[in-house]
Image (cartoon, rainbow, N blue to C red; front, side, top):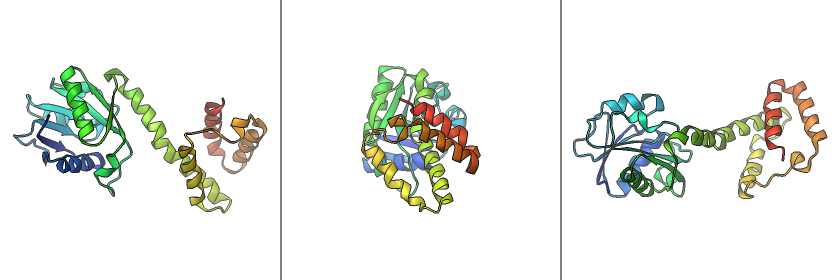
Length: 224
């Protein structure tokens, strides 16, 4: 659908996507100023500057961003526009293979835009699904809860393991197996053992009081 793509922004997402497009045989350029032959300008920049960068792109070509929460209005005044967001955590230490098999949220305002968004998602190795433009922020909240907060939970667990002299890496197999078991809930809350939960809250109040609100909120959210 596109043969030449210009990528603006070569951070975690931009670098992986640029490399994958090159692997697929597309003519790929990068830099602040779009290449004149580019049919698509792909913005892989921080959310807060998408509008500024988009406004500097000449009107006429397709423009897209890879933000999860940002609505398509940020790409004004462009009308030929869409979005593709990889639902994946990306690291600069790895290459485009980290996109393989991940899902990707696509949004567009016309059939043509959706078709191009789907094409781009599939070209870079994603499994696309549509998200309405007005639902993008709620969708991204889900992504943050499932991805970013997993890091928070890991760090909190490591902190408490370190407090009792346990190896911090001991929590990783438990977290990995929970995912492999398709998030089958086990432990005191699954058993309805609220006396143990209260004991946890008591010891946290004594040893790590700043974690009491977090534990209480998570316990309530986990309650069957």
